[in-house]
Amino acid sequence: MAQKLIIANWKMFPTKPAEAKRIFSGIQKGVSKVRGAQTVVCPPYVFLPELAKLAKGGKVKLGVQDLFYEESGAFTGQVSPAMASAYKATWAILGHSERRALGESNELVGRKVRYTIQQGYTAVLCVGERGRSEDGEYYTFIRTELEAVFSGLRRKDLERLVIAYEPIWAIGKRAEEAMQTRDLMEMTLFIKKILTERFGRKPAERVRILYGGSVKPNNAAELVHEGGVDGLLVGSASLDVRQFLEILNVAAAA
Ligand code: PGA
Image (cartoon, rainbow, N blue to C red):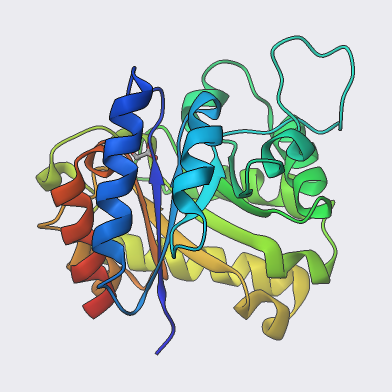
């Protein structure tokens, strides 16, 4: 059975390095006992140097929450793949809805995904609609977000691509407000269909699809099992060691 991929998105938390180290160590300790799951933690950049030391030789991989599409240059405030990989980051969340809300376009996200993959990272491309209407308009929206990025990718890039479907309306809520698993299954199939249309069946099968949005210990198993996804992108619950380890355990067993 393929391993489930569970990614922690710490967003702009915690505020202190000591707290970041405590959470990371707790996760790492618990993960050593979990089989059937691959774990990636994406902290704020500033914690990478310390967490890279803790991560050495362990099972938990490090990622970041964004990257720029150049190696270096006059780009105030940006961080490049080369800089983060010096601290063992090998994964990058790109196009998260909270960054898109600050102005990132599909075109910009596409550029970042292409460059980041070329630099040897696994890109976790986030897509998701703001809301849902009866007419199913959100399918067109998701198609547009995906195709904007796919147009610049080669088949072999797909080995380093993960798609995180995160409906914006389901982010940052209680477990009960996460997506219904039947709706998730439909969306998972739709994303697979678009991938297959564009790249062919075999290459498309290599792309893992995750769900994100209010994943908690009490909904993780059904989301994975009935939603047809390969794993989860976890926000707030990933800052709570106990909750995150529970999610890992139930997802791995699903
Ligand atoms: P949440 O965040 O789990 O807190 O809803 C998920 C995300 O935004 O990646």
